[in-house]
Figure 1 (tube, chains in turn blue, yellow):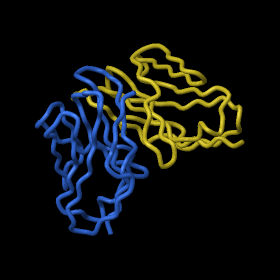
Figure 2 (cartoon, rainbow over the protein chains, first blue to last red):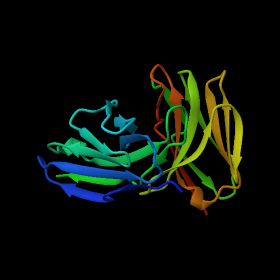
Figure 3 (tube, helix red, strand yellow):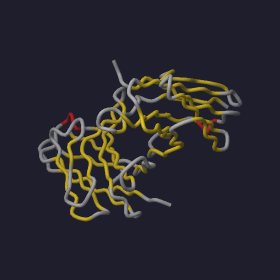
Figure 4 (cartoon, rainbow over the protein chains, first blue to last red):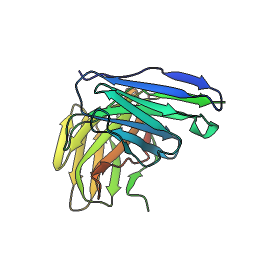
Length: 113
Length: 109
């Protein structure tokens, strides 16, 4: 079974803090994604990566950055957390190019106070 | 106009009822995913289809490429089917996945 894990299920941070959300997949997938999910808005793509050290902006990259130093790990960074970044963050991975199943992590519910 | 429209947004039904969730999209697609998210839980991929019909247990997904429409059916629904179901076609100019806002299903015992 493909396993996508995220470092925390719940996080509470203060405004202005730097926040790291970690995602690890164990199936040698090339593609990894970070989404946020908000009520009434559905899932929105923040950043994605098709290869190590490669990153592409999604639909809502502002206020976020990412790092992919190793194939299995994709990190989402909030340089200076703000209250409007309170959300559920979901990581996902897929193999290779073309059409393939997307596997999701359990999600991290981040609250910024 | 949203690129992906799901209906209904919310659905409450009695155990045993036949459930249909609809998804319409406006872009050309290479595939369409149906996803399930339980309360507080992660997201699980139920189906990925690009034509015709797929069946897995009590779940059936159909797609009509010409009409840009897909349906997810649940037969003999059960309270454990209570979840949010998300339609996610892949396509458009960038061939990326576009997520619907989801249908919240609640099955009463």
